[in-house]
Length: 110
Image 1 (cartoon, rainbow, N blue to C red):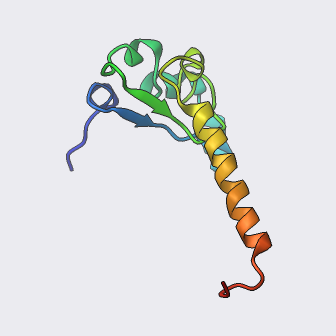
Image 2 (cartoon, rainbow, N blue to C red):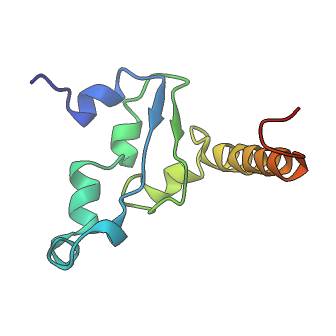
Protein backbone atom coordinates (compact mmCIF):
# COMPACT_ATOMS: atom_id res chain seq x y z
CA UNK A 1 0.00 0.00 0.00
CA UNK A 2 0.84 3.64 0.00
CA UNK A 3 2.74 5.18 2.85
CA UNK A 4 4.42 8.43 3.81
CA UNK A 5 7.96 8.45 5.12
CA UNK A 6 8.66 9.99 8.52
CA UNK A 7 10.46 13.03 7.01
CA UNK A 8 7.48 13.68 4.70
CA UNK A 9 4.96 13.21 7.50
CA UNK A 10 6.72 15.52 9.95
CA UNK A 11 6.35 18.45 7.54
CA UNK A 12 2.56 17.98 7.30
CA UNK A 13 1.25 17.45 10.82
CA UNK A 14 0.10 19.83 13.55
CA UNK A 15 0.54 17.21 16.28
CA UNK A 16 3.09 14.43 16.21
CA UNK A 17 2.07 11.67 18.62
CA UNK A 18 4.92 9.35 19.48
CA UNK A 19 4.82 6.06 21.35
CA UNK A 20 7.50 4.33 23.37
CA UNK A 21 9.54 1.49 21.94
CA UNK A 22 8.59 -1.30 24.35
CA UNK A 23 11.79 -3.30 24.53
CA UNK A 24 10.33 -5.50 27.27
CA UNK A 25 8.01 -7.00 24.64
CA UNK A 26 10.89 -7.98 22.35
CA UNK A 27 12.11 -11.55 22.40
CA UNK A 28 15.75 -12.10 23.34
CA UNK A 29 16.99 -12.18 19.74
CA UNK A 30 15.21 -8.96 18.77
CA UNK A 31 16.29 -7.24 21.97
CA UNK A 32 19.91 -8.16 21.35
CA UNK A 33 19.72 -6.96 17.73
CA UNK A 34 17.98 -3.68 18.64
CA UNK A 35 20.14 -0.57 18.46
CA UNK A 36 18.82 2.66 19.97
CA UNK A 37 21.10 4.68 17.73
CA UNK A 38 19.95 2.92 14.56
CA UNK A 39 16.28 3.21 15.53
CA UNK A 40 16.63 6.92 16.33
CA UNK A 41 18.44 7.63 13.07
CA UNK A 42 15.88 5.71 10.99
CA UNK A 43 12.56 6.34 12.77
CA UNK A 44 13.13 8.78 15.61
CA UNK A 45 12.58 12.51 15.62
CA UNK A 46 15.97 14.16 15.49
CA UNK A 47 16.74 17.83 16.03
CA UNK A 48 17.18 18.31 12.27
CA UNK A 49 13.89 16.58 11.50
CA UNK A 50 12.06 18.68 14.11
CA UNK A 51 13.26 21.85 12.38
CA UNK A 52 11.20 20.87 9.33
CA UNK A 53 7.92 20.82 11.28
CA UNK A 54 5.21 23.37 10.64
CA UNK A 55 5.30 26.48 12.85
CA UNK A 56 3.30 25.77 15.98
CA UNK A 57 3.40 21.98 15.55
CA UNK A 58 3.81 20.04 18.79
CA UNK A 59 5.03 16.69 20.11
CA UNK A 60 2.94 14.43 22.32
CA UNK A 61 3.93 11.17 24.01
CA UNK A 62 2.15 9.28 26.81
CA UNK A 63 5.48 8.60 28.58
CA UNK A 64 7.78 7.28 29.69
CA UNK A 65 9.98 8.51 26.87
CA UNK A 66 13.10 6.67 25.76
CA UNK A 67 15.21 9.76 25.22
CA UNK A 68 17.21 9.71 22.01
CA UNK A 69 15.18 6.76 20.74
CA UNK A 70 11.71 8.02 19.80
CA UNK A 71 12.62 11.66 20.26
CA UNK A 72 15.87 13.59 20.67
CA UNK A 73 16.39 14.29 24.37
CA UNK A 74 16.45 18.08 24.09
CA UNK A 75 13.13 18.01 22.18
CA UNK A 76 11.44 16.24 25.11
CA UNK A 77 12.00 19.37 27.20
CA UNK A 78 11.71 21.87 24.35
CA UNK A 79 8.99 24.41 23.53
CA UNK A 80 7.22 22.10 21.04
CA UNK A 81 6.78 19.38 23.66
CA UNK A 82 3.47 18.83 25.41
CA UNK A 83 4.69 15.58 26.93
CA UNK A 84 4.74 16.70 30.57
CA UNK A 85 1.34 18.40 30.25
CA UNK A 86 -0.03 15.20 28.72
CA UNK A 87 1.45 13.15 31.58
CA UNK A 88 -0.01 15.49 34.21
CA UNK A 89 -3.45 15.50 32.58
CA UNK A 90 -3.33 11.70 32.46
CA UNK A 91 -2.72 11.59 36.22
CA UNK A 92 -5.66 13.93 36.85
CA UNK A 93 -7.93 11.81 34.63
CA UNK A 94 -6.95 8.59 36.41
CA UNK A 95 -7.49 10.26 39.79
CA UNK A 96 -10.97 11.40 38.76
CA UNK A 97 -11.91 7.99 37.41
CA UNK A 98 -10.66 6.22 40.55
CA UNK A 99 -12.56 8.65 42.77
CA UNK A 100 -15.73 8.03 40.77
CA UNK A 101 -15.37 4.26 41.09
CA UNK A 102 -14.41 4.34 44.78
CA UNK A 103 -17.27 6.68 45.70
CA UNK A 104 -19.90 4.76 43.73
CA UNK A 105 -22.34 3.00 46.05
CA UNK A 106 -22.96 0.20 43.66
CA UNK A 107 -22.13 -0.27 40.02
CA UNK A 108 -25.16 0.55 37.92
CA UNK A 109 -26.83 2.72 40.58
CA UNK A 110 -26.92 6.49 40.58
